[in-house]
Length: 288
Image (cartoon, rainbow, N blue to C red; front, side, top):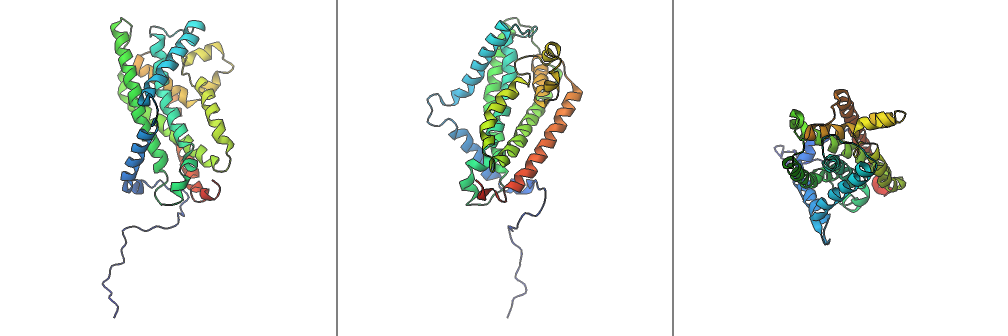
């Protein structure tokens, strides 16, 4: 005799994804332990079996800042006002490094995780999301170095001061990470079919750095090269770098319109990247 009291409720139900767009925040929260494990893996394995290990977190921004100071400030004569050129460059490079780390780490999501994706199910967005979160640790270390040099120059008599808007600095970093995540998911989806994109990412990032006002004031390019100034003006990263210096060094100016434009572009790129990412994950295993 059939027992009608047996419950047909299931803990989990795996069904084909028919939604055109799905963020799956609830499912990501259910797999938060896996997200933590991926973050831990990213932090531990990046510099495993290296001589200097995590010291590379410190060496790279310091050497880059010194190089930029020599070439762009001492040789090219770019003026940074009352702010020491080294500190001016270090502020931009620290934030820029977080973006590039997020973009590089997420742009190979499908290719580097094909073996895992082909064996077990979990929300695929956890993988690029773990990269963005783990790189916050790297950013925190590099930002600590910036603070140390900031204090050093302050006691040396440099005219430094924090702007009141520095309280919104974490929001700025979140926007930078979201932009890197969106672009990374978009590129990762394309790499599954067009491998050339993986070779173009490194070159594209280097080129983008010169268009993002990392090593010069944003208004300088508008003054010296007004014909090509639009390349910087329409670059949302340039407004993030400019606002970073405004908040931390109280130098330059802030563009509210530019920040609104940056936020709109970031959200748009993120949702487009997520849309294509969700679509690609259904069939990528056949092309990778």
